[in-house]
Structure formats: structure tokens, C-alpha cells
Amino acid sequence: MSHTVEWKVHLHLFEEEGMTKARAVVDTGTRVVTGHGAAHRNPVDPDVPEIGDELAAGRALYDLGRQLTNLAERDLDGVHAPRPEPRPTVGWPM
Image (cartoon, rainbow, N blue to C red; front, top):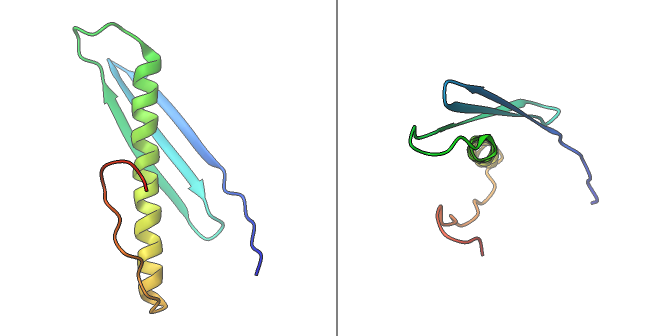
């Protein structure tokens, strides 16, 4: 069975008082999931906004991915499907 969908992720970045905050939002068609991330600049570090944006965005997307994975695992439990083997949470993907 062929299945193709497109999910668009909206990534919002906010900067205030040396902190960058990010919000990543995806609408799957059945639910809306929001991930959050933040980055704090050390006062002794140079002010490079792109680094804060990258860190906060990456953390928000990581949070979003974690939530989607958790939702899928709960959905699998609901249909009594066998669960995939756990993957390591750190290190390089296989």
C-alpha cells in the first residue's frame, strides 16, 4: 500500500535578554504537536545570534521528535502491535 503525506513544521524563534527560545509546531492532520527549546548565551561569549538560533531550534526539533516518537509508541500499544527494539538515545544513528 502506497502512502504519501506532507507535514509542514513551523519554527518560531524569539530572542530576549540573552536567551533564544524556539517553538516547533507540526500539524499531522489528526493532532498538533509542539516542541520547545531554548539557548542561553554566556555573558563572556561573543554575541552571535545565529548560534543561539541553531541551538534553540535544534532543541525544539529534538523535543518535537521525542514527542512524536512517544505518540507513535502509545499508538502501537493501542493496536497491540509489536514494539520495535529500543534504539540508543545517544551516539550516532545506525
